[in-house]
Length: 490
Image (cartoon, rainbow, N blue to C red; front, side, top):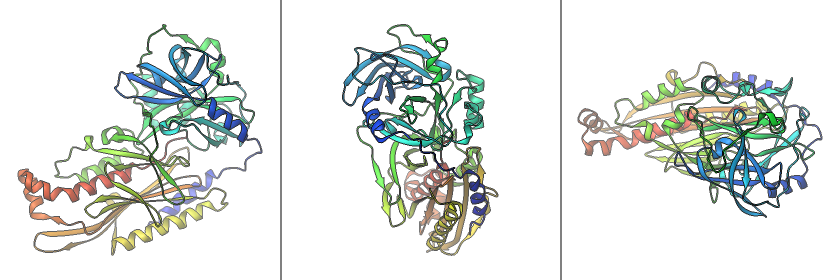
């Protein structure tokens, strides 16, 4: 079953990470950095959403740097430091083309003024992003490796963005597609906008910026610190005034969270990032045509307003995998990962495999994914591939991300004169390098009352619809969740 995955694993071979050099930020340096970064909380914003991000102190003890999109259009900005208190802040200078902004605090902070460098970190060395991932009030750090995607340096923003987002920026600005960025082997996530990226000497080499929507994820990139050091890049901001937001771009903003809801799935964990509507996610998924086809199939003849469907977006902070689950589904650990119970015989399986350090990782991933397929087939019972929802070839991106999606259908089983069911499975295999996620929707013994369904479709009778639609609704949102599961570009 799912023999096409062989192609997936063969291509993944190309992105095996090279051995790391000894250069890596020290534990002591990262501990200090976590205390010195500021938690940005922006409120009273024009879009009605509170936002969060990260800032660091530079070039004086009374100024911080963050990403412009975090605070643009917001009238109230506070910067919270772990050991130094809370400060109100306002914009004083900006580098709009690189999504950077300088804020002035209402008084000097005792946090360390960081050192910047325009030197490019060595290939295969490690750097660390330090910030407030997913809007958590406590800073964390994440080690990342400088990849050969930077060769010859510097890498450009246009090389990172998928074609749809690249065309949007090209047409609307204001960002420069030739912006120099740092290509890394992992992603910066929501909350890392404005976060400093440190080299092994403790110098800031890049800053988290961007935040463009890309399906259920946001694309955050690391802008070279050299832009901050060149005074000719800066433009002044009128004192006491908020900077205008970029109205032609769609941002995936992160609201501040007092705590992060995290579910331990055994060998991986999923953290709740935010809630998004289907409309917000669907505009920039990795396969929009495939999603449209699926939407038409699961919603055919049903009075469903897809654009208003709400999904809870869960994220794996190690791989960057993002899984939007239907609002209200019950996510719990299972024997092989996690399972989200949707209702009416519909569930979503989530499994992951991290083959880091495995020289034969592509074969390990293949074996793991085949086991998922075997378990899926056993759970569904006798089945055949559904060619309407099975890729002929895996989808791929230049950053090494690959996705393979497939449907398998069981026979239609009549229960009595009114009820029938058809078991079905729909799976997304997503991966990049040694990181793999399998997300599968299962429909088992989900009874459909065909006379009531026909009455609902023909007359819109509320009683008939309330009884006939729930199983179809649960299956629709589960399959959409599986299709929208993805990994952000890096």
